[in-house]
Length: 344
Image 1 (cartoon, one colour):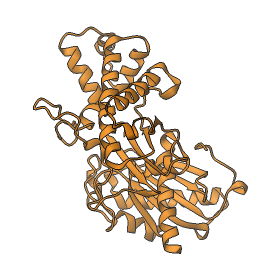
Image 2 (image 1 turned 180 degrees about the vertical axis):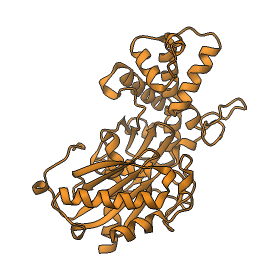
Image 3 (image 1 turned 30 degrees about the horizontal axis):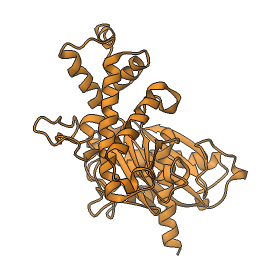
């Protein structure tokens, strides 16, 4: 199973809509009962215009997708909605998304539900992406899995026996806030300021910041030449230079893998999943590149060195396969799960 689309005549009813809200774009897809994508689109978030306006434009985009798929809202059983930041899932509220100040304390779930005339399942965006991988992606053969999303931040999702772990305060599965360095000199997270948290070491901005510190301390690297030409130091630049053999870039990526492995051990010891899936934009090319394979191998090595023997040899660690489609597919899956509970 991949994120490739299928034709309408191949699809299995009922149908579900997945809406994956990001700071820049909102990804929307029509998904069948087996998790296959029938149609999808992306619209600008236009954060400054507010949440209600974005939901109104989302409803228009959904209607267009349904028409394209020769479907109507009558064919849709439920909608799933994934959003970033803190939230109150029982109340359907998005609370304080860090990069979306115009969306704070807004009843997003009910707004979209009223516009579409459908029940809406609500989840954190990383939890939704995890559910997508669990349903039809890298985790589809497992009953339980944990996903780490590496990108602008470090997100996560925990799926146990088909249930997304949301927690009492809708803060479950926030894996980026696991402590991996308890020293007084531990780095601060570039977003929330938390000290020693995984996000302070394994998010894209944190990786770039660590490389910048090494350059400032006098380490030699091909990165310096690119920065001198006006380029911004990013995790992508690190990947590119590591692929060309740059020692400093390689060192930073290897250390990132080690610390991620430390965090993974803590999660595995807490919830005992069958698999760990690594997703998000910062995968250093995945299994298609030498750097991506090296990164994954180092994560596995650290896990093997630290994990208790009962789980050490039985937990699969691999990359996600749905890419940027995981969020809307997983959101649709969250909507599907909610619909099945209601239908019973």
